[in-house]
Amino acid sequence: MVKYFDEELGELSKKLLQMCALVEEAISRSVNSLVRRDSALADKVFESEDVINRLEIDVDELCLRLLALYQPAAIDLRFITAAMKMNSDLERIGDLAVNIAECAQEIVKQPPLKPLIDIPRMASLAQSMVKDSIDALVKRDEMLARSVCERDDEVDSLNDQVFRELLTYIMQDPKTTSRAVQLILVARHLERMADHATNIAEDVIYFLKGKTIKHRIEDERV
Image (cartoon, rainbow, N blue to C red; front, top):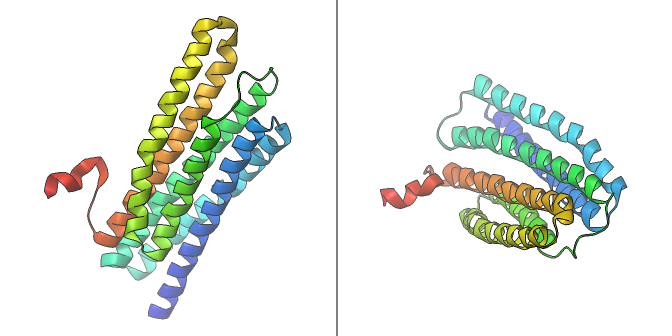
């Protein structure tokens, strides 16, 4: 019984890594479709959405199977419950990549508004945060998980910077409003991706240490 349980836990980790890889690729393609003005890349993001959604269902079903058949306790129970929450966050990040791809398809219909510098930086940060949050789970690495949480502030700062810059474009020339708003939405979606990656990292810390750091609860309990 223990052997089969360990094998299925390993399968759960494998599926989470697979989902993470798909989500990372979706982030990269969605932003590259914007930067390169390539609608074909955006189409690939739409195609990957179904795969990510099916994998989310597979992960949920596997988690429920593990809970029902083996009635795990302590750290194994924390791992499975954390995996279910992470699964939801990964699926939501995939949805946000689709949102960015949709914005890209609208943006490429119009002349470029400005060189894109901060948005690709935000995408790179968000992508690394997603990867590292899942790696922290698989490697049982608390410090890596904490580093993901720390990077969230940098993404927030870039999002604010993008908003201020694009608002200036709108104020100077109202004809840029449509293009600027689409880029503001892209930055907002990337900021939300980073938030979901942070959620995953916080769940990793809960799994490893059995303590909650969300909403600064950890600081309040010290």
